[in-house]
Structures are given as C-alpha cells and as structure tokens.
Length: 313
Image (cartoon, rainbow, N blue to C red; front, top):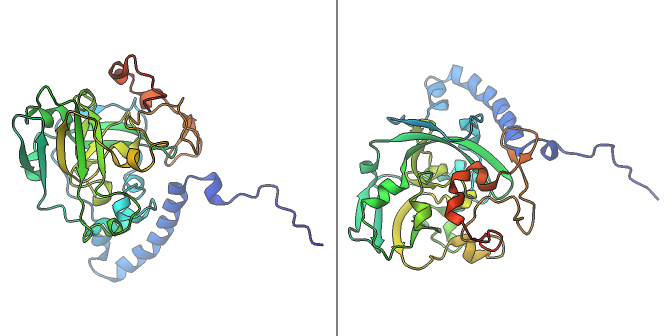
C-alpha cells in the first residue's frame, strides 16, 4: 500500500497571498509581452495605458484615517457586480457592454417634487472623499471616490413626512448585462436605506474614483457609497430612487435573509453564517487586521441608539 506524505507546507500561492496580489503579478508579467508588442505596432502603447477621462474635483476629504489608498488597478479589476459575472475578475472583462450614455435617474414616491435627472446634470460641483470599505467576504479597500453627498441630491425632490426609507434600483437590461439572463439573483438589483441613514453626511453618490470617470465594472455612471456598511449595500448603476413609507425589499435580504440583513452595518460581533467577520484583509496586503465597528466610522453610531445590532444586522 502506498502512503502519500504531504509536504511540510502544503500551501498554494493563493492560500498565503491575497488573490489580487498574485493576479496583479501575473498581469504584470503578461504586460511585459504586451509592452514588447507595443514597440512594434504604432499606437498600441497608447491604447494599452488609456484611462477614463478625468473629472473636475473641488473639495477633497480624507475620511479613512490616513490609511494607504488601494491601487487603482486592484480596485478596477477586483469587483462584485453579478450582472456581469460572479467571479471577482469577470466584471472588468465583460462590463464594456454597458452603455452609460444617455442615462437618467427617476426619483418618485413620497416626495413633493418627483422627477427625472440626466446624469450630465450631476457632473458639476464634485468633491473627492477617501473612504475605507469592508466586503462581507472579509476583504477591504480604501478608495478616493468622486461625487457628492446623497442628502444634497435627495433634498431637491422634497421628501415628505411619510418618507421613512429610500429605495434604489439598478439598471436591468439583459442585452447589456449578460448574467441577468440567468436566475442567479432576482433582477433588477435593489437596495435601501432608512431616511436618516440616507441623509447622514457620510452617505455619498459617486460618479468617479481616483479623479477619473467611474469604470463600468465599478458601477458607472452613478453608484451609492455607504462606507460604514458592507459593500453589497453600495448599489451600482442606479436608474431609479423611490421614497417609501415602508421598509423596501432588498435583493440580498430577499435571496438569503439568514445571511444578509437590511442594515448590513459592519459589526465584527455578528458573524456571517459561513465565516467570521472579526478580521479582514486589505487587498494588496498579506496580513489580516481587526475589523472595526461601523468600519471605523463611529459618528454613525447615533443612528442606531437603542437598537439590538445583532438582531437588526
């Protein structure tokens, strides 16, 4: 009988190095070949480094405690966007099919001035905010987003006293979004906030990142950015917003209510049923760090005074 003796350290590279790191190394090595080809083919070098257009940015705010910003390459190629694929690298390869112009956002419901806004109207008076973000799968990033406070946008529609929640909806178009032809989720993607959460100064609508126009795979042309909540709350490619009196149904709460609650506040004391939330790994780093309550934004704690955050997860 043959007995297989495993090596002292039977680990693969992906077991000890964050996926984004070893994939970046492979992309770099592959890029050496591309660079060589660029020398022989006129114009190829320029195409290889083409970046999204820059945005005019006014005020800049550091809201991540001075932490190092995650590199653009990682943030733009390691994404959760199920409309374009369930793998982290798929959206960057497939989201080019999304057409971001023309684009409008419809706002309705419990408000005195419902209406439709063209995305071009939202590209003035932009500011940049550097936020940290925590994903439910125990990884995190620090990103400089470009956009404007969500409250500033919502107030123009004059929500009424009956507006207790704000519901958001992503574009649903199987022609542009290939995975919506499947049943992996109940389309279109939906999310929601309590009205006081939506009006908090940290809540942000983003149209860009790193001073550039938002890439399709990161939620172009308009996405929500809620830094004290898990990433799935930051809905992408928004086409509709509705003020409601009742708590709206949200996609992941509907699909897996035991795993994903409506609030989705970063709370290291509440484990996901399949993994711990107490530690996280910043993409591009080797070692894990402790997860901070509310992702390190204690100023939002007053929103949840008196609530059992293990029950309302």
